[in-house]
Length: 273
Image (cartoon, rainbow, N blue to C red; front, side, top):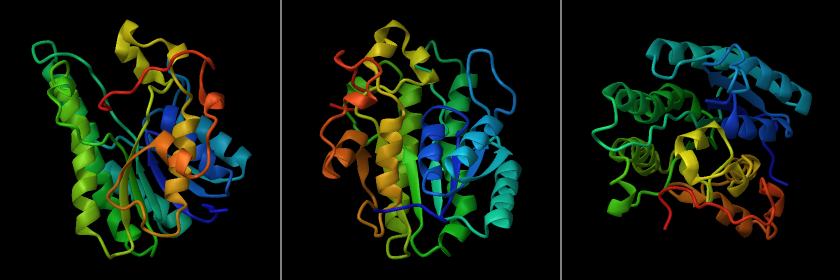
């Protein structure tokens, strides 16, 4: 079976949600995991900190390095990468998971929210990729995985939240460009997106449009990510992958265990026809 044993993963936004699930899945292989996120103290409404996830990783058999990191800050990102390399000797995998969301129309999107989404989603993804690249290119079989959707220029994905869509597609375009830029270098760059809405703190932004029981658990994305990241070749380079499709190709046919409420109709995620 493919494994991430001995690999070093640098995961942004890994203190909760999908990032945490990807980290914990890799930990079961015995991977080294850098938890690059901002949360150090428990939030009353948002469970999970870099230290609580570090404990989970160690309990699962992995090796954790929690580093408080605001990916909008170039100095903090550079320092986090240096710490990761100092502790584990290199970086094999970068997971650009950290993301900001604000679903509102043009008039109702404050510029501070616009700036946050572009600073985290686009600039943060680009900055972390740039900072990790010198080490990734030394790995031999390195991977960058962005949690980003396949670009879809249907206007319906723009009309209700222009700013968020452009910011999220910025992460997708990083995949498009970097996959071609570094083709043949041993580095694979790809994107992963869920078929259905995932039960994370972000669903609060969807309001009454999606209920928790219409969602899947983050573990479905983590299992798909594991298959992509543990692949021994560059088969996924430049691809925009959907979690369910990746798992189906590996032989999974029963997805009920991922459902928050098995048997309930699931809500499709944004950007997918």
